[in-house]
Length: 265
Image (cartoon, rainbow, N blue to C red; front, side, top):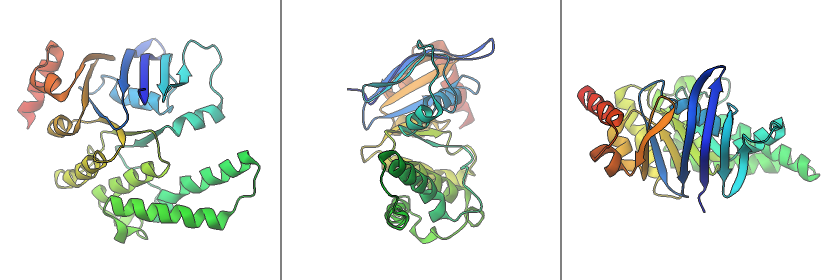
């Protein structure tokens, strides 16, 4: 059973069609890279998967359960949307850390809120101290995983861009999403900081983390991916293994894009 199945996904902004019939599947532990020129719909696709945007049509299923069905007349409630978002973790281009909180607090904030909500839903007392202790222990382990154990009490303004992005990755992992999504995670970084973030992402592949990565780092996508999708004009112009897409692309749009990308290296 696929961990993620997307079928005929559409997204319109007014009369503008941004996504037009996007379909793909992803198995547990696989890494999917999405490449393509700016304006092709890559970020909109991630935002729809994370329910930061509501798709216009199509279906999204996670672990065999439909979490979005565009054919249904009724829209998901806000509670349903929050539950759907828990299936996905999203690492943004610009980190989006809370500047008023230190690294540890940035990671534990969402965990604390979720633990309180879960206790309320179950009708049981919320043990704030126990939840805080457990979440801090988990956050410390995640910081060690991304190589930032010594920075847990620092604030975002005291970190480099690469360190901020690694904190953002730890924060996304904290809620144990089924699929971890990256929206051009190195685009806001200087070249010398890009490598440390890509190294962390590559390290996650050795576990069972399922990932979707929108990236302009072609060599990285070629080396880390199990599947690659090339998007253009709101559709999937080509998809396949890294060998098929990067070495033997069939679509002229893919060929032209890769030729331009190689010229810029």
